[in-house]
Length: 406
Image 1 (cartoon, rainbow, N blue to C red):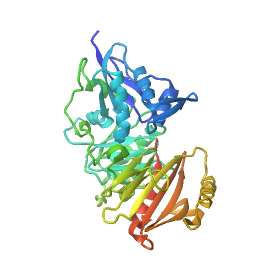
Image 2 (cartoon, rainbow, N blue to C red):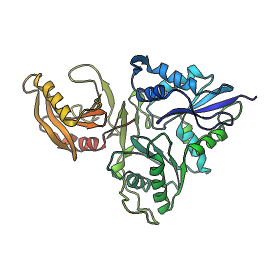
Image 3 (tube, one colour):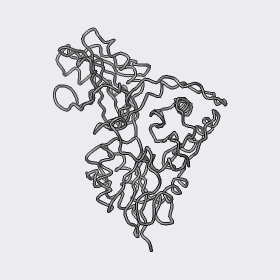
Image 4 (tube, one colour):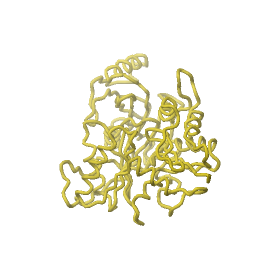
C-alpha cells in the first residue's frame, strides 16, 4: 500500500484527522486530552485527571493519536490567526510525532476552494470570535447579544474580494448557522460565498497532498511564514483592524455593497486567552518585574509615560461583584493614596466594570476591570497626571474590543 501523508486539524475546537488515504474526518485522542491541550496551549502545564502534565506532552499525545497507521508524515493545520507562541508549541509537537512534519495555517488549505488566482476573502469562525482576512484583517467577537453576522458583513463590505470562503468547523458551536447567515448576506451584495464544512475541508485535504510527498498546489498568501505585521513574536499580536470601524449592515442585504470606509490601522493583540485592539505603531513588551502584576505594556512611541497595560486572570464562575470585593481587599492592603477613585459598579466605554485610579511617580493609570466568561481582563490606561486625554481614545477602543477567546 502506498504511504499517505495525513492531514490533521489542530484547533480551533478539536484535534482530529481529516484526511488519511480514503478516510475523511476521524476523531483521535480522548476528549479530555484534546480539551486540555487546546485549553492550556498558552500555559506550560495543564491538569489532566488532577495530574499536572506538560502542555507540549499533551500536544504530542493528541497528534500521535491522530496519525495514520500506514501513513508517512503529516500536515498539521492550525487557525490562521494563532499567535507565534501557539504555532511554536504545535510545531514542536508535530516534529516529535512526524518525520518531516508540515505545519500550515488553515488558510493554506481553505483558499484552494476558491478555484481562482485572485485572493479570496477568508472568514474563520471560532468559539470566541470570527476572523475576516482580506486586504486587511478584522476580528468580530462572538459575544451575545451582538449581531455577529451583521458585523461580519459590515467588515466584508470594506474588502474588495469577489469570493468569500467561510470556514465553519462542526466542532465550533453555532458555526454552521452563522456561516449560512454570513453567506446569504454576502451574496446579497454581489459576492460569491462558499461554505466550507467538514466534508468539503476533507475533500480539499485529499486534493492538497500527494501519496508520498509534499503538499501540492500553487503557493498562496497563506503559505508564507507569518510576517511581523500578522504575528508579533511571543505576544502573538495578529495585525487586525477594529471590527467596529466597519459600517453596520443590520437588516441590509441589498444588491449593492456600501462604499468602503477608511479603517484606522490597529493591532488586535492576542495575549493568552484575551484579545484586545491596540495601536498598530506602539511597541509591545511583557512586564514581569517591578511594581504591579505581570502584564503586557503597549507604549506610545512619542511619550514613554503614555501606555496601555493588559493583564488577565482565570476566574471561572466569578461575577463582577465578586471581582470588586477581591480588588477592594487588595487595594485596602496597599499604602493609602496609591489607589483612589474605586468604583465597584462603574462603566467604561459602555461596559459594566470595576474602575479605579493608580497613582505613581510621574504618571497615573486608570484601570478598567471586566469579567468576560471565565477570564478577568484588566486594562490600564497610563498618562501623565492631568493628561488622561492623551490616552483616552486608545483606552476606550481597547475596552470596547477586549474579550476572552478560546
